[in-house]
Length: 398
Image (cartoon, rainbow, N blue to C red; front, top):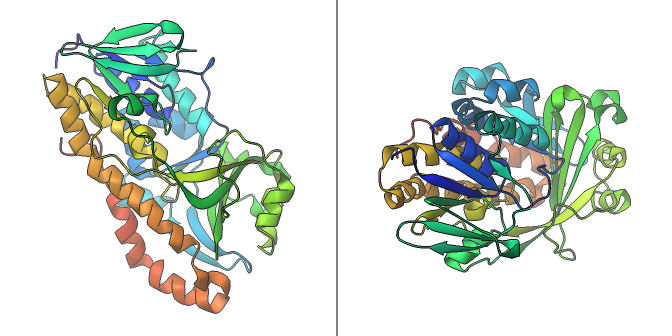
């Protein structure tokens, strides 16, 4: 495709920035319209598996982000009440030897800022703030984005990267059905010095138990510890990352869990809670000169740690498709075809892991040992994760 097309991106989160960077590096003119008055990301952690590190390298920012991240030595499962551990992955030398890239744990604001800085290094005025997307108007030769306050912007292609409650998706396809999963989540970012010495490790722990699980891993070179706990409850159905909860309520949800889990909860300066909703991953993302990206088309439960990574991969593949195919509609269709099955499989896999993390057999150590041997020994883990980690967004078929 000629590098003259004007590309509009609705949404300045991780997916929108990754797409913008992918396109700008290929010579396209890109503008990002973000509803927030200032650019920022929720203060939380994100896991970047080797396929994500590979995609970030394709965007030219891997080395920069690596300096601001952690490279945990391994991932471990720990039993909810006794703390017994099972190694899940070697995330250090073995990950690099097998996949060519490390597994990173990253503070979300650091990831967004790294992408934003790279975007603005190419086009300093690419990001437009306080620009809330409301509607899309399609024609044969252009697409128009309607913003709040009556403003409009037009371009040749529109990318809806505006998250789980996407206005672009609703405008194009009319659907926004979400179902409550019966689970709520607690999250916090904890200064490492608040934790007992034995917990300040460069290791990712997934605490698993009947009806719930807790994940924690280090951020920012070990300065911070990320915590996210999931528990089965049906009395809270607010889907918002910005609702503050209480340490007392969270601690009660994990009553009887290991003292290290309670230490995490009580060390949190603030703690947030939200309800997990699920949406069927879309198989059709594109319409005319408009398409979707990231959570707007394949929002997922976080139980494969692939949400941010998939949106970064989307951005790389989108850029490749626009480069390869001269017709905008064909390019967007090829992008959708290249990504829909992979992202749908990821969403299904994340949902399947819910039962694996919350299995009733985990109530006792004897039951847990048998269950871990059947579900989390090396062979099942490879079946579940190798297809994810070995993917290369730069060479995948388009």
